[in-house]
Amino acid sequence: QKEVEQNSGPLSVPEGAIASLNCTYSDRGSQSFFWYRQYSGKSPELIMFIYSNGDKEDGRFTAQLNKASQYVSLLIRDSQPSDSATYLCAEFSGNTGKLIFGQGTTLQVKP
Amino acid sequence: EAGVAQSPRYKIIEKRQSVAFWCNPISGHATLYWYQQILGQGPKLLIQFQNNGVVDDSQLPKDRFSAERLKGVDSTLKIQPAKLEDSAVYLCASSLHREETQYFGPGTRLLVL
Image (tube, rainbow over all chains, first blue to last red; front, side):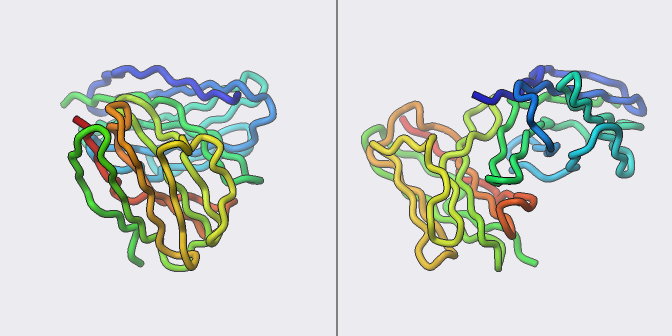
């Protein structure tokens, strides 16, 4: 049974700081991952997709994948109060199209 | 481009009653997914359709849940009879093809009393 684990938090950071969100996974064969953001009462919205080892940057967001250690992380630079949300990590199987989500980490950015 | 549409947005029923949810995916998207998200948890896949065929329904409680996607476009998810533990948000998502990014609808929030 594949598993994706996240610390539920809440993770609290001051405005302007770097928020670091982590995710570990059980299947060593997992190839790719999505990060989604979910505001309270809303549906998940796509932030980033990463499938190769190393870093991938998009604006204030950087996703990191380390297949040897089986973890994925999301860094948010210059955190804003509007970044306060739950961040969902999901393992993606390209063959089946199946997403396996972690429980999500709640981020609170304090002004 | 219109996103994934779902209705109703909210539903309150009593246990043992039946309920149905409707989803209209993004135009042209072949793959459609139904997820259940219980409060404090990540979404869990219930069923995946490719056009009008079922690809994966391994986590669908088939004694009470059913789903269909007639004509490969709209889909309905039904629960009959509902239990208290079915209280959750039911999310529909679609992707152009199964190896592509999934886009989520606004969800239907179900409360079973």
